[in-house]
Image (cartoon, helix red, strand yellow):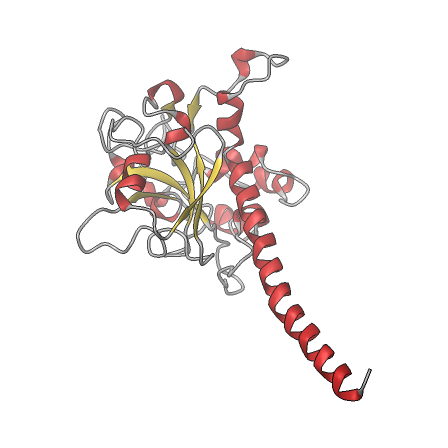
Amino acid sequence: MTVIGFVLLALVASGFVLTYIPKARLNANMVTSQNNLRELALFGAHHAKPDPKRDATKLPKAIPPGTIVVPDGPYFPPDDRLSWVVTLLPLMDQRKNPTVELLPRIDDRKPWTFEPNQQAGLTRLPGLLCPENTPEVPAGTPAVTCYVGIGGVGADAASLPLGSPRSGAFRYDGPTPFDRVTDGLSQTLLFAESRTDVGPWLRGGTATVRGLNDAPDAQPLIGGQFGGYFPVGVNVAMCDGGVRTFSVATSPQVLLGLATIAGKGTDPLPGE
């Protein structure tokens, strides 16, 4: 082969590598983010498809509250409480998340601003971070989550009572029993990626639970309020523990229907 031939071959090979590697990395990061969501939604999967070998009485019966509420303690507004993440810490993969060391450091009867809680909140939890386009967090500031719980339809949805047609899977003040998800567990959003207004994983309120804002001046649902990590759209977890990807072309009405637990306006997803 001539020198020119070698040069042309090298250029072609280099072009292939430069095209293939970023695409492969993007796909790998996509799978990792989906697995993160699947792990967070594991309690839903245990409920939807119980293991006959396990004691059914010990299976989860409800989606945990969106914040830690202290029944006999002082009242804290949702933004001052600890988040649902604290409830799920024991379920997270201990091989990649330092949950064993972290749990004793968190006082769940105190607000998230309590100094020991603030120190615990500096701990980075890889299971809460999307590996693609991960938000940069300055040293000494609270570690964040790339995944938020879905509170329903409307900016105030997580504050609504359980019986509201706009209520979603997560509510600030109480759990959501699985049997109240009458739209269907596989038809109801539980978690979603969000790169907008990324907040501390330890903090309750809108940092970790959000409704789908349907106000006329609100940001687009995909690529605005949710998503922002992958060009194809947004990865979400459903209440049955399943994970789906919605493209930017998905109708807002479909997502709004999936955001409620009993809105009776959910169109079946393809294949359902």
